[in-house]
Length: 308
Image (cartoon, rainbow, N blue to C red; front, side, top):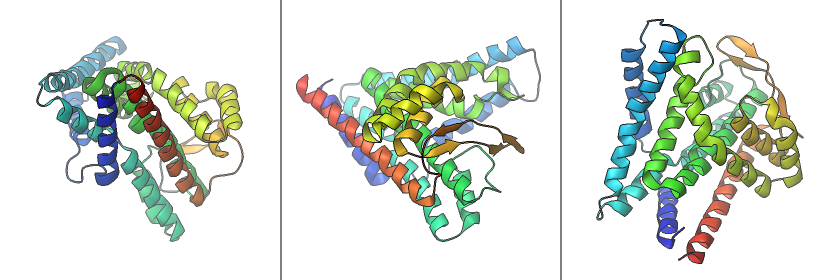
């Protein structure tokens, strides 16, 4: 790792801290709308056989992702644009500040006693039904979202930028976005989203484990490690499992359990250990991610100076 790469990462993180996500138009939101259009063209209301749907999902992924990865590679190969493109794309891909803002909005609503507002706020962060959640369930959902997105929007993003630069971070975040849209095991997306989910699993294998390691280093190490080893296999997906269980244990919180999805109660395993989440624990989770980010920056700069 070079010192220049370290400086690019520092500037992008500073811009994320200073500006947060773009207020008017976020490229990932625009990409999501484009994905809806592509889905409508390739899939629409038809119900072709499973293998055809899997093939259409693969085509959709390549059509949506590869042109932008190539564009990022081409722009970053232009000498006078190289560093500017790297900083801009990493800043747009990072979501540490916006993640904290969304979580704190939920906490503020709970502290004001505005349960309805808190339900609306947490509904912007999670895919579960939030209209009937009580205070504890809202706090739990928010903390789970913070831990999970700590991998996607912070540590995984930094990992792929370090490994492949601007094209890598574009590849990773677009794959994340498509997985969030299509990576569900329901009637519509079980086959169409099959490739999307598998690609996201592959891209997240290393980041998930580095995120889990970060969590256990900055929190209650023994508890985080024990929960990772003993509980991660019970969660949905090995990558989310290591992230969620290590984070819950390191924060000394009990997460998981039944949650409402699409009008039904999904029986999820209990993970973590310790206290039931309270509104005050939301701020703890946000600061937890920020400490992890500081640890990454410290290690990145140490590597930059070492190999300068």
